[in-house]
Image (cartoon, rainbow, N blue to C red; front, side, top):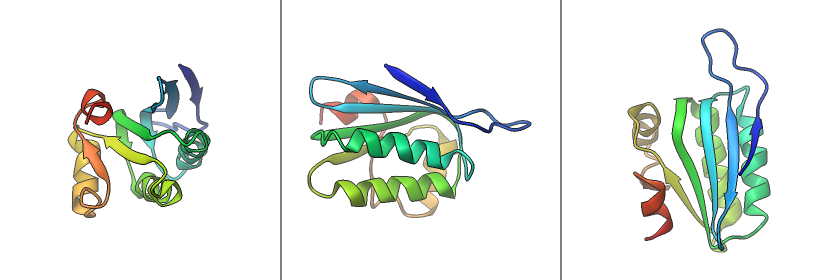
Length: 123
């Protein structure tokens, strides 16, 4: 797995880390730390590079995320729009720190949100 860190992570914040696993045909992007205005660009870059592989399934694993702000939501919506019908984007979120903002904004109705990576890969 290739892993990269983003700048930032000021006082009380957890630096964003993004790792990419290329499986047989699927790509899993594992995200940990805080996704905020400062770090969202790093996440967007990693997701764009992963989407350029045009995998049938691109899983965005947010189980390691401590904080998920509106900038992260914008990145997910943009990813889904860029991928169109070529790649199915699945978001893994089970922690309320990530799931609740997605629910409040209605994005759980727009994005394919799954509770585990296994379920995202095998359904």
